[in-house]
Amino acid sequence: MNSGTNLDLHELGVAQLAAKLAAREVSSVEVTQHFLKRIAQHDRLGAFLAVDAEVSLAQARVADIRLAAGERSPLLGVPLAHKDVFVTRDFPTTAGSKMLENYRSPFDATVVSRLGVSAGGAGMVTLGKLNCDEFAMGSSNENSAYKPVLNPWDSSRVPGGSSGGSAAAVAARLLPAATGTDTGGSIRQPASFTGITGIKPTYGRCSRYGMVAFASSLDQAGPMARSALDCALLLSAMAGPDLDRDSTSLDLPATDYATYLIANSDRASSTTPLKDLRIGLPTQFFGAGCSPDVLAAVRGALAEFEKLGATLVDVDLPLTELSIPVYYVIAPAEASSNLSRFDGVRYGHRAAHYSDLTDMYKKSRSEGFGDEATRRIMIGTYVLSHGYYDAYYLKAQKIRRLIAQDFQKAFTQCDVIAGPVSPTVAWKIGEKSDDPVANYLADIYTLSSSLAGLPGMSVPAGFGAHGMPVGLQLIGNYFGEAQLLGAAHQFQLATDWHQKAPGTAA
Ligand code: GLN
Image (cartoon, rainbow, N blue to C red; front, side):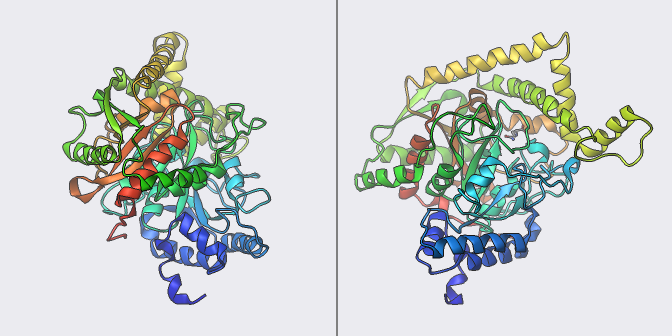
């Protein structure tokens, strides 16, 4: 192909790149080379923790062979990268922690193999591993043990977290799509902070096999890309049962979300394609706690949904505020248990000098874990300990159930719930880094749906203070991914917020 066309390959999304590859207008090797070059040029963003051109090009050659043989699967040859909590055989996996520095997994996570070029995979080429908060704990990516990630819209600001590398890389057009994980907002909040689209599916929709565990009853994988359609393409390949390896994965076949979206966009010829959609607005998501610039963008997006025919109804989620203490008891409790495997014996960091076994445990763990991981291990161990278990952990579990019930009540009045993703736009690097509670409070709008196990997404909805992107959150009922993606797709057919690129991408 002529090299002039190569210049703007990074402007293309997943579906457009796939179409070009299928038409053999460009090869996967050429696409891969183009993005590898861009990644190197934008190294300053800190989005990547591992890149290996040889590995990626070898994968691209496999994709090209499959394309040459006439295979036409919808992701074949398109590049992506994985958040560094998905274990990969071909790249190191650190989970953003010194504890796993140079760790290499002997196997691929299920999500990685389902998307990848090996037999049975969708044929996507892995460009590397993406920076994240240590063990996915954080909201700003400042908890990465390696380096912070800069927001491509304003490099003095955070990209959000914990999937901040994924979000920054997609926003800066270093790749068309990435994987992320969301335990309490880590796909939705960084998507919102960087102006991209991301979906956290229903708990159990994607296999957790090979995801470095943070809080197992909450962790969920999902795609991050520019549009709902591109997310749909990825999710169709990522989702589906994996019962032999993850007993909590849902025993439901993967849906072809992209086909669903395309089939339903015929309705776009109607001026009111969303006329049957009732959108619930929880009073608690629109109060004084949310900054006015964010609310203005969210309300603007909702007005667009109304134009498309949707009806807005008020709903009540009275326990929203309690989702913060409940999450910050349950997630650390599970984290303290999950992270106990890092003992310096089997894998991970081991202290160089120690006097006996106990000293080796202590030194290895103190050296390997950063401050936030240590804080969560301590909180988690405390709330699970004898005498406190009933007062904190059990109580939190009971309120968790009530939060889930409140959502079910709300869903008797509406089909999806909408609101902001985060109370503010992306904050300055360093602004909240000494104040863990300030970070926790900023999770107010994402935690309750995570605790309930519901699917949620962030859809670019305009800009707020300092010209920074604002995301609209859409929360669906269990298994409602197709409905969420469909509503977002109609919105994106009518608006162009999701197509805006950072003008000054570092
Ligand atoms: N910000 C939340 C936390 O720090 C959520 C993180 C996540 O979803 N992985 O725990």
